[in-house]
Image 1 (cartoon, rainbow, N blue to C red):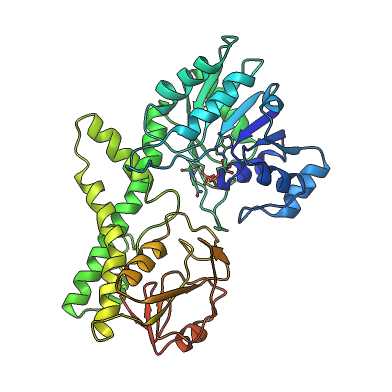
Image 2: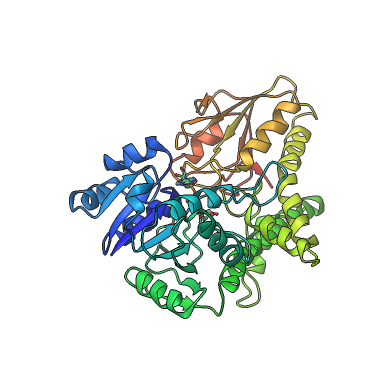
Length: 401
Ligand SMILES: NC(=O)c1ccc[n+]([C@@H]2O[C@H](COP(=O)([O-])OP(=O)(O)OC[C@H]3O[C@@H](n4cnc5c(N)ncnc54)[C@H](O)[C@@H]3O)[C@@H](O)[C@H]2O)c1
């Protein structure tokens, strides 16, 4: 069987490498630079080893392409393109639409279309299927299914093989074929009764995280105002063996999923006349954390950051990855600058970001740790400035939440 995977980013390339061990994979991406790199066996995604890619290329099991014609004879096509928000923070299905166009215009035979991109319930049935049919000139009847991706980039203990995977087709045949495909490289497949349940479950998983992170971020502020250690309190609560799950406070949420997916759920809820106040407020609390942190740093430094050299340590949205999408560091830097601070940042995992390079971890008046990569030495962080504020809870001896 030949599998086309549209989008060769975090999700698409990860799937390509797992699927490539069992099928012939065509990795389609509209970014020519990524395609060229991939064909040289160079992975741009954490957790996908270049060596694994090279061996798939050598065995003829993988090619990358930006030519839609290469998808014309695939048996299954997986959609793994971004689903961001528009400037007005509305679901943006522009990339999904482009993927549907590629499929509709190029598929010569009936195939199974599986969506892995995160979106609101009804996307497969009411958006993807009609869009592919609209772009298809030969009126082919395809099969359609959803299997939302749950990959956590950089994570070692859970991967495609051992993370349970939800799926559902628009028809029983689509469900059966989807199961056959994933069962080659995933041990635990969970069929749900409709694509809408799978789509809703994915959004709810990430909303659960967003809301709990907001709750713990709000609690960090409460604990500080009461003069109680937030970390000790959370550890104490976490001794309860049931009914409690520990989340950690931070400068806010980042990445492509947690700050974005709940807004998909809130939007669709409101369109159907259901309340989404909790979800909306959680998003605000997380966004406000950067301002709160800058207020705390200013208060500890005579109430004024004017002209102070502030080094933000760690700008990736989470430890040990180079991903800066929606990173909380961006808002922290913005608030520091609007308070008159002269801001640079240190993050050798990220290297370059927004036209700036990682600065040395030394010589600042103030350091604010937003993300602590394992490779960054705690002692060096403490020595980088006379005042260090740590938002991660990992730098012992620093000021913190
Ligand atoms: N990254 C994660 O941890 C994660 C986890 C679960 C689900 N998801 C979801 O998976 C989807 C993909 O996310 P990602 O993190 O892999 O994104 P990504 O930005 O890493 O990769 C997307 C890739 O798609 C390509 N692309 C965009 N439009 C295209 C088009 N029309 N045709 C071909 N290629 C196109 C881009 O060039 C890019 O390489 C999103 O819906 C996301 O919410 C992501």
